[in-house]
Length: 297
Image (cartoon, rainbow, N blue to C red; front, side, top):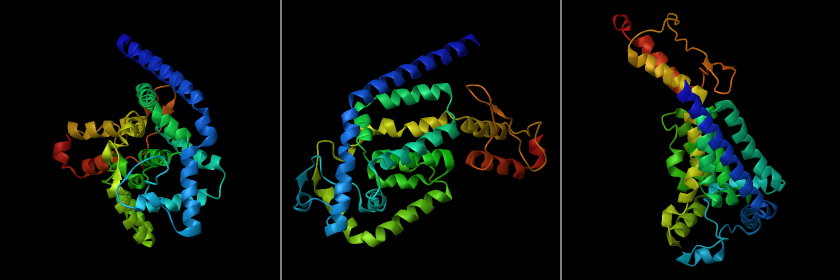
């Protein structure tokens, strides 16, 4: 008990310290929020595309080029996201994904060690914090991943930022993931010619880190997966898996169903298990129902 208490207190201190550091970094870069250069860049590209049909800057179409700020690197399918928000206030561009992230965290309710890990990951790259406050579309990719781990939305939508491919593979075993991939394909078809141009601009792009130029964004993108691993709901799914592997039927289970004990929240209170959205719970329950009765004893 003493060891667990010390560990919990240590995690609380780490989470609080990371939160304080994050606040300091944010206050030092308020100018980025006021000017929102990344948001301005992609809204200008969207208005240019609506007016003239030109999505990329002319220098990106003249052969190999050195990537500098102002070059459009996102695939044309993101125009389905950019166009509606080009007619909305700038605050809406930030408010919608931040709301998705906040609701997802409320649903996941990570353990205290999860909050500590989230704080550390968020502070690992101050550059990413600057990008997020400036309205970079990275915020939408992170929100899509949060929606996937919390509500089962297709993480394949993260492919709107192709450099986050490893995170887009989350939930590939789900049918919804393939639905999301099919949706991206359908949305890309009307812009096929522009997609081919985007591929050519990516091949011609020259930058020091190549395809790893978004490597510094990985820790911030991993926050969603950490929240999922530290979630009370994930703990319930792991409990169901351990029950199945042990080879016996839980005492409080009824014929044809599996009852998972109510999980206690790390910060107090009680949380009902989420039977509908826990893929691990559903698969384990089906496996237990189909096992021979002789092996269940």
